[in-house]
Length: 601
Image (tube, rainbow, N blue to C red):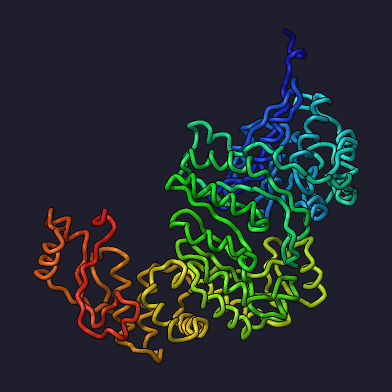
């Protein structure tokens, strides 16, 4: 066979840049699976998927992409990976100079003209759902015989793009890799000639989408090392002004039969965590409860399912069903955002916070609850944010995420923020610096409060101490005072270990109008619960009696191996019964034998 007769396939590489190794990218997997299943027979196309992380060295990712020898590279973009994707796109054509480079996702999709204008190496941007758009692009390119060996002209590429719905592209293209100097006339002209083909209709029947994790049907996966994202619906009926999901109000569902069959794959594979990405999972009670019932009836004793819900709209039947759910099956993320009714109306959310709180309190503690607040919303100053914070903390969530408003392109919040003199980051992640209601200093103060909330609430290291504090004083008042104290001590200037935070909180007790003896006892109890200590810090009053430790081990039948028994337990004496719900009412000397997890097993 002559060299000119050799058939070259078109190689297409889907590139995801995840936040960490644990994450998976549902978008590129869904698109790649859809394209693979729907390519016409005889198509000369090879597909590959690469998942990288924002923490990988730039040159390592470029090298991996280059080794695919791809004719087309497609990136999935979000606010948190936008800068990394920009850098990668800029260099892809340095190593694959003839490759066509495209991007999609909410970040580039809603700011296509911006990114096509600043990135000469970017040839096109997909707006909206990508499955059918990518399929159409590849089918049409395949007809031309496009590969690195037979390059399609830039004018022909432009003509092709304009016939395919859902694409932003340049009418005038850079003609060769030698024309990439940012100051050249051809580059400036290319940036000025951006066009959009036509809107693409949404995929109405989501059952057309194949399962996005085919490796789970093989033995080529690590069930404990990945988070698997899953969607049973697309779209959102609500109109939250800061959220891009509100742009697509057409909610479409997979059939429950399809959902059940796909959940069975996760359960059979014993994966550790499945996160539903449905923007609001609990829309149709009959449907969403049937999915919960399927999970409960078929649960494998291992897989945790995560749902983002609107707790206010949980039905009576749903709340009754949830009482049956044991620990380790479900976790809920609930976006409270604020308790300020004026703010809620301004961002187009329901202001029925009373119903929201009532329903959250009815969710059993066997279901992990992650509640969200957003700082920087309209009409929310530091005082009203404090009220929102205390409202959420009164519900005692397992985790409180203190987030900060992002002013996203394509949202109604962008228009409001522009008209009302908001200040925010110029580039992704577009986080607010200041508002007419909250100063830059206020926002930075809340940044430090966020650090303390993660350390002293979300990690559950200080549970006994904070329970007493928050049962007695306003949680925000505590964090506000403690944050001011921590700033004076330079606590936020560098990374700190847990031991430091124990010491700092103990020092802060002198500033608090609470029972200091009880506080010290509770902090000691939290400290020893974190694990066996090689030694004790200076603030810790260790009251140890080795013989009494041995006696308690014998009484509990734990003295099978003296060395291990002492190594896996701790003996301590307290001035209160710190293990009770109300230790202040149980002031009596109490000895406790603490068994660590390895001993319990």
